[in-house]
Amino acid sequence: MVQNPGNLGEYTTSPSESPVDMQDPGVSTLEKFGQTQVLQNESNIYCLTIIGQVEGHYVLPPQNKTTKYEHVIPQLVAAEQNDNIEGVLIILNTVGGDVEAGLALSEMIASLSKPTVTLVLGGGHSIGIPVAVASDYSFIAETASMTVHPIRLNGLVIGVPQSFEYLERMQERVTRFITQHSRISEATLRELMMKTGELTRDIGTTLIGPDAVEYGLINEIGGVGSAMAKLKDMIEEYRLRKPKGGIQ
Image (cartoon, rainbow, N blue to C red):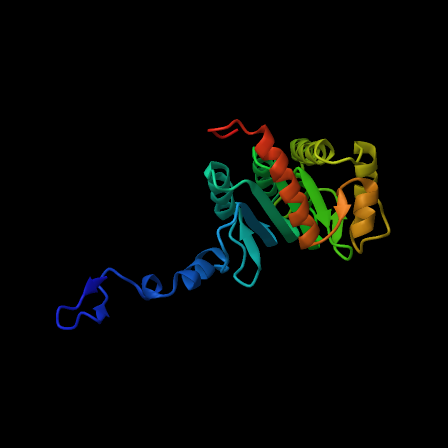
């Protein structure tokens, strides 16, 4: 942006600048990343939202509400690097999506050294379940739901033994991650996945908030207030563990 010598109070755009570059930064962030710039004081808690369908290696149609995993990963890295951030709150309302992208986000959340809390609002279905259980502690709204079902494949599938072996191995990855990061047993999880008669044209189980807690997928029923209070308590413990004068 160059200054107009004729009037110091006016500005004109250079040929390389586009209208997007001139607009409010909050609008630009909304268009590029689907996020709004919330007015707030400096906080030691970073809030990450995973909304709609988790978009992986293929771009979904524009009418789909999506969370692009290539946008989320740098945010998690930045939260880990920033010494001013002491905790991460992940809010979920997702129908699921790409399996490998969902597992990548789950592994990223689970590997953060700082306290993490997830909150399922509305729904945390399919591959959203590993993301929901990846944190140190998890909450679910009383009316929220989680659909547990086996991995599905779409598109062209070659009907050979290798295809089914690959599908089974991918299912094992998801199952192992969920059982390692929650209180549900593998036998119970597989039973919920293979249940018939509950989902139309599919197998699986839909768990409402209290059911998810009872089965051990989620730690507790609660909302934003409960999640924030828990995260603040965990941050206090994190400060006591963190070596003075350096990061953990």
